[in-house]
Length: 277
Image (cartoon, rainbow, N blue to C red; front, side, top):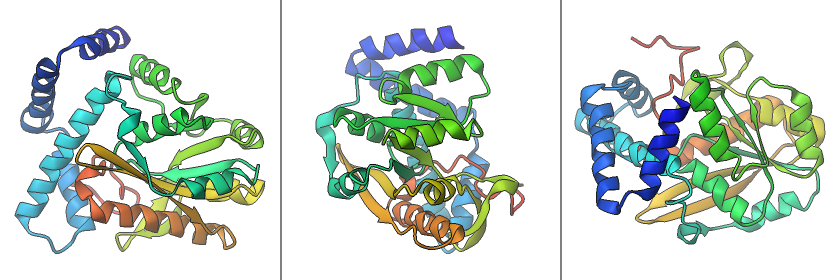
C-alpha cells in the first residue's frame, strides 16, 4: 500500500489540471456509484441528525459530501501542490493568539469537518508549532504514508490511546495540541448531546485542560467558493468535564448545520448508543 500511495501521490503532483480533474471524477464515481462506500452509514447519520428533511435533501447532501471529500482526499495525497496558503482567510486569529500567550499550551479542538488538514497546514505556515493526535490506520503502509505527509506541518503526530506523557510534554512546550473530538468514544466517552442524541464523546481535551490548566480553543475551516474560512472560539473551562465536552460538541454541531455537506458523515458516530442496520 505504501508503494502504491507514493506512486499515486507522485502522479497527482505532476498531473496537469485536466488529468487531475479526470482522476477526481473516476475516484468519486468509484466510491459513490460502484463501491457505494458507506452510503448506508451516511444516510443513517443524516437522517438521525436532520430529522425533518426531505429524501431529496438527504440524497443531495450525501452526494455533495462524497464530491467534497473525494477532492479533499486527492488534494491531501498530492501535498503540497493544492495547499495554497493564500486561499486561507483567518477570521479571528486573535482568539488563538490570546490563548497561546498564556504559555500553558493550547488544546485546539476540531472535528472531521471541512479541509481540516489544510487548516493545520495554514497554522504551520503562520509558524505555530503543532502536535497532532490521530487514529492509527488499519493498513500499516497507509499509516506510514499519511504520517509522513502530516509531519510536514505537525512537529509530531501521536496516536489515540498513546502515552499521555507525550501530550503533557507537548503542552509544557507551549505547543498547540490538535484533537479532533467528534468520533464515537465507546465506553470511555462522556455522554453529550449531539444533534439532540445522547452521544459518547471524547473527553480528552477537557481532562487535559483541567490537569494542565491549558486553554481550549475550538476551530473550524469552511470552504466558500475557492476560499477557506478559518474561525476560532475560546471554550470556557471553568465548569465540569461534562460541561466542557458539551460546549465543544455544541460548537461542532453548529458548524455542521451551516454546511452539512462538508462533514465526514462516514463515521458511525452513534454506534455506542444506536444500532446501525
